[in-house]
Image (cartoon, rainbow, N blue to C red; front, side, top):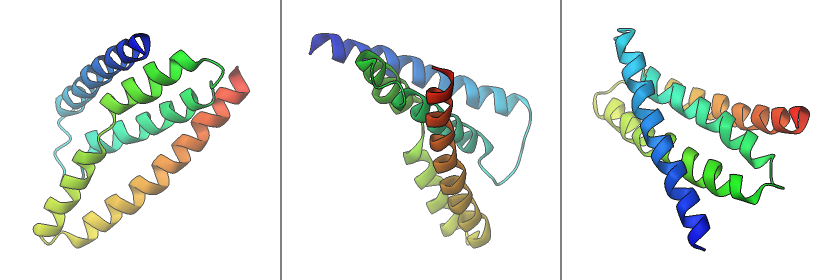
Length: 122
């Protein structure tokens, strides 16, 4: 039990730091747009990684470190939800709808791709 908690904590720390670094990197690119590029990037990448890690079920420790820890700290579904709510409050219906639909399609596809990569490469 302690081992699993430590793996989740280490993964969560790394995921949170990487999330912050992605935000800084995208802000450095000066992509000023109403569309939340940083959150979309993180959600896509996190979905890809979670699919990949899930394909490695024979490595139980990687589930705790990668899926629960890293991806839990890295992905930003709560931020995604808050951004959509803010867009709706600002009457940005088209952007909010496009963002929600695109996120679902891209991230579900990324999970499937990650699973396929994991099974193909390993």
